[in-house]
Length: 173
Image (cartoon, rainbow, N blue to C red; front, top):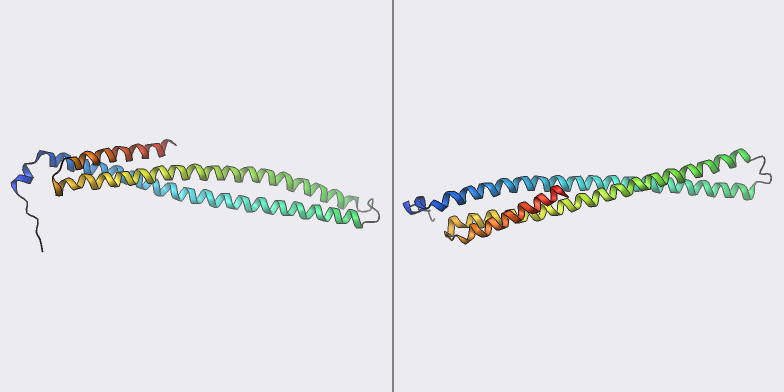
């Protein structure tokens, strides 16, 4: 088993404290973007479910309207005297018109839910990319403590800034 040895050299490195603070800051940003990503994915699933429900409702209205229209046509074809069935014909015609109107409104609502879903999925994508870049930044910054190479925190900072900007883009979308 290998043990890590801490020498005065490690404690005397002034860069260590700055890199440690950078790791903490990137970690905090990572947690914010990760939570936003999870919430966006959950919201997208909810919006998609609501859209699917609306589309099912739309289909039901269309089917009712078509069934009413078929009934109306059958009645008109088979009724020897349309005057006797005038009330039924009027009722079926009014139902068909109502179902068509309701279906149109439901279709607009479903299309709105689809747009909400697409918007939320775009946000989630930005958050996911931001999360990945922040994770990369965190790892790169942390590598400084093992390798003592100053380019690790520099690349980590670049990745962290890119991840933060991507996360902000998700919030502003």
